[in-house]
Figure 1: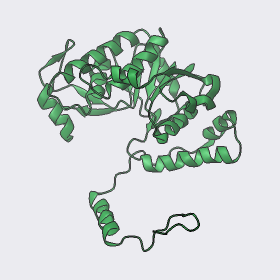
Figure 2: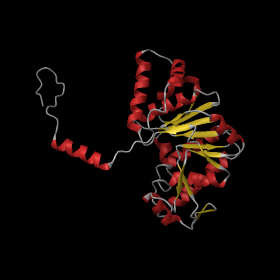
Figure 3: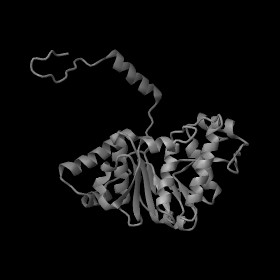
Figure 4: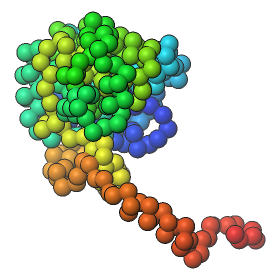
Length: 295
């Protein structure tokens, strides 16, 4: 199976999250190759021959946004690039903010039998408490995109994991991109269009299952996970560790003691912001050269 990630831009957290995700999957021999689609290939030299780079740049990403200039179409084209470079291979795309836990054998077996996987089912558009889902349902209900009609049973799945079997990969990604483009031509709110396009495309080509018990996805608690990941890599730097030692160390790292979703009540955030305004710092100093005027 080919593990695939997409990273780009200057925000270091996207890249160290991706590096942590890659390390977590190197615990298992079931990953035959790791394909990173990125405009920062130098950030992945640490992995040596474990990682195969597909290098992209701003011009490529601008083209990947398509005629409707949809940002998250870049993700779809990144998955497509990995599929085209690795024909006849099972492909599993993961977001950077994920990590492998256990039992990847179940996903590999499923892919070999024609199953597809996404991270978890989030529910139907028509029966949801999400305002975004309901707006999408209002725009899309009863309409047909690339031969698939949106009904009250049409589901949204989380796209933190997208795994497609070898025999279906090329046709499925083409279908998903086509659906995305056709939806973008409507007045549908775009926030989750690529995720929904993946959801209905994978559902239409066969059995779609969840990967939530095999792979963690901390989209809802990045602050705490970023701190954990920073500590992990700073330990590596300060002890002059290497990749093989870090693979051993991550096997021993407890990954179930941090929540993947951590939402505080909005009133707490409002109170905190108010206190920042009412009680500003008592003193603020910056370093200044000798003779320079202080703030």
